[in-house]
Length: 242
Image 1 (cartoon, rainbow, N blue to C red):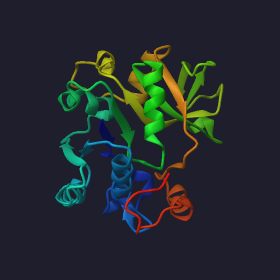
Image 2: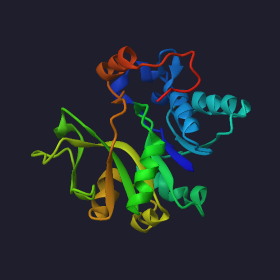
Image 3: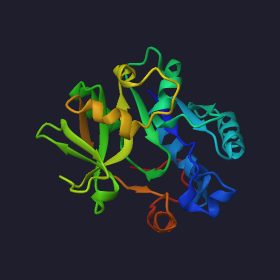
């Protein structure tokens, strides 16, 4: 399987760290967040990853170059964006990356996670959905994209940061999609936000899969510090043991 890893954001809530370090390169137990992502992909059989870049792209580009020199069996590509395309726009403009693929991953690099992508994939194939969204239980549903699901896991409602949440099942920022997703991406060149512009159009067509693995958005200083305290893996392990 191939994967998109969305990593081009400014990381404004992590300043002053992100004044000089792109968010996907902030260290967790001494290892860049991007490195943990690549370990996770490799563990679950992903063979190619496309990482989009924009802000402070140079250290990301260098990390990718050094990683590819290791010949791990996972090849990483960079898609530099002179102007941000939005999470949906990145997928739209790099359609050729997944040409001919039955399924592919879309993940936000903001998160630190040890999610079991192998189990995620099994559920996705069983559902036959155009898109399967990883979900987790949150204590702050008003700050997340919240899904309501039926007894089979079909997502019947999805609202970004709802005033009156109908559940505490939050979007984990990880999806497995089929090429049908491109039918829901505008052909325009304007930026597209995946959560706001694409997912609402997939209500009744996408399924939710609950992950009980570790997941934390490291986008604030508080969460970043918690992630470094909680993360159960150390810098001396090449791959997390699920």
